[in-house]
Length: 428
Figure 1 (cartoon, rainbow, N blue to C red):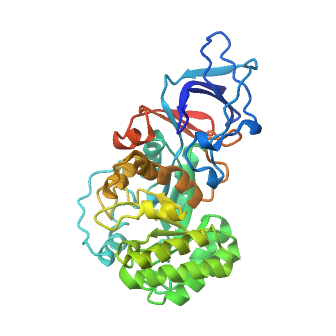
Figure 2 (tube, helix red, strand yellow):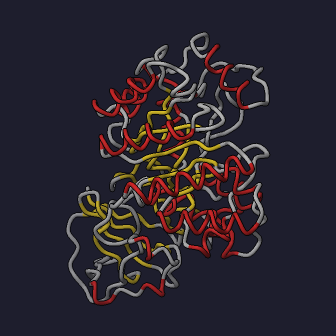
Figure 3 (tube, helix red, strand yellow):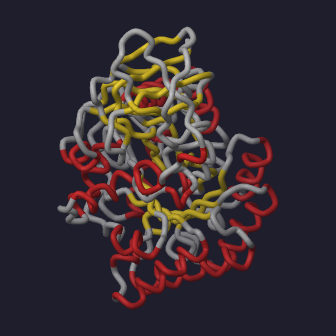
């Protein structure tokens, strides 16, 4: 049944509105009708669009739509009174590892070392022992994420000769069980090395060719594969051959990490992959001097490269204010969620936005909102979503939260009172 959501406060709008959802799309936004008799909503007209009424995400092509006036008789709708709740677009997890999760299973004490190589080796050695990947656990975690308002996800699925495409199969099974209520992109992720692990490149090609993966991944071209030029040659070659986006983990720090950052920017511009490349973590931005950091951010903005940060552990946090001023896109993700890598994480993107804002020392409302933007519009940009946002005609992925403002929603980690995915109520 189509929906009429009454008495909502859209993110950035000053007055309460009513929202009409038809065939899974947000079709009309109008000034809240106080009359209970008709609850009619006028069509939003393009000529009435006012970007100034909303947050400055209009530059991404996903700004909320116009507020209409007039009247039109309502059809058969299910009416939901939101009682002044704040409405956000569906939350976006732009960087996680669902195939590794132990969610819903028995407690597993974490004995991995603290170093990156220790964690990678620990997961490779013990994942089979704990039945990873497991479609039941992935389904349970996706269900929890959906109930918390996440409707779009990009997950990095491990691929290597020992695992084959098992992780992709488990993820696909879990997503199928949720019957379209959540959208998941899978990255062919060479966690254990790509060039250093013979047979991995061929499997990545197969995963992309068959559609099991929708994104080509990479990991520390220098630190893990120790051949950054050939690593990037391979990653960009696969992306161009299969016409898919790129998402590279870059943990390498300092000048080495910054050089790889620059190399990815150069490759992106040279290959015409502008707007289709994401760098995960990018810890070097927190290590280099201010001038070089500014150059890297400016280069990322020019190439349309997104940075996916997770604000995890004690690793450097993305400079969200500097990126915002420069027009560089910042996305946010949970990273590992209760898995062999780390026992932490709950899959809730509002909690993750809170952590990002706190670690970045955001105190003013406008700065706190940058963290929420990363968990919504920034993630949507990184995932290349064209049907995302709060404008008429876009997919009705909406989250109602108990908060007066977006900043309060982040700080209070506000309760989600209603979650819509593709116009369907999936949590209430």
